[in-house]
Amino acid sequence: MTLSSLFTDDLELLPLLAVAGAGLLIWYVPYLGETDPGWKGFIANILRIVFGIAYLVVLAVVFGAFIAAIGAFIAVMLFMVPLFALGGASGVADRRPRRGYRRDPYGDDYY
Image (cartoon, rainbow, N blue to C red; front, top):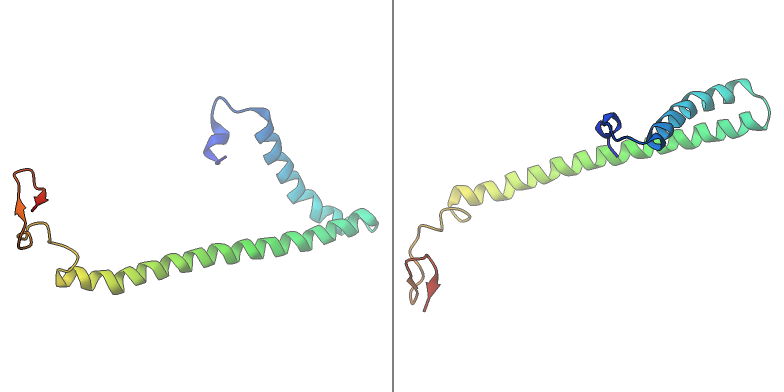
């Protein structure tokens, strides 16, 4: 489910309730942790710690994926661009076929 699918005409009630419930939890858990000295406040404070760690893990994964994409781009630039510059990876279609092969009118090689 994407954010744009929330604004369609055939939307059912459950996804909207899930988004509203998540928004309520984002607001209510810190409020409960700060105001309730009982067991609910204790659990809310534990949830705040767990959510904070999960947020840091998600940030690490996103930045790791971004660094991996940059690394892949650098690898392509380091290894593929010189091949194209030397003509090793491009321009082979217009060369003559190998010795012993003939080219038929349809462009297929055969003996």
